[in-house]
Image 1 (cartoon, rainbow, N blue to C red):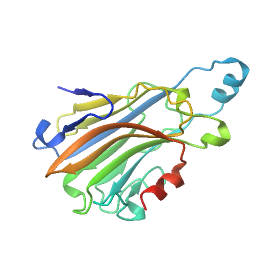
Image 2 (image 1 turned 120 degrees about the vertical axis):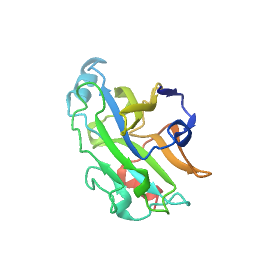
Image 3 (image 1 turned 60 degrees about the vertical axis):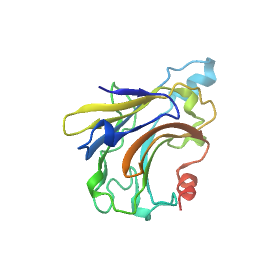
Length: 197
């Protein structure tokens, strides 16, 4: 049975699914319908492209290498333990907008944490932010039986943030754990990379 998490809560994936190895991390969102007068129509009328990515971090919360940042420009980590399934340019439709597959057994021993981030592409030039996004979520699915393990819906209003840490999968006392984060920032993708290098 899937567990619905609140911001800041965490669960042991190892305890929930002892034989867990292959995880699909689904991320989804919808752009709000245009509103707020002419300015709202102009801002929401342009393309609205959100991008999911994952930072593969060591025990010091640093990227193992530049190739261990997996996103639309680098879809697979060097050892193929993390594979991004491709960029969704619109976010239209129900269900997952972007999916990142994780093979826990293939992760390098140095990897202690995976951080899942969604940022708005060209947010500043398009004057877009997460206040214009609704129905945002992250969910984890056990690929061996296609059962959802946990999900977290972001319920807060983020009227200035252009990037969001949705969640983390990290190693704690030998157990893989998922934490619902829901932390926004105004950093672009390059600035976020700098945080982890």
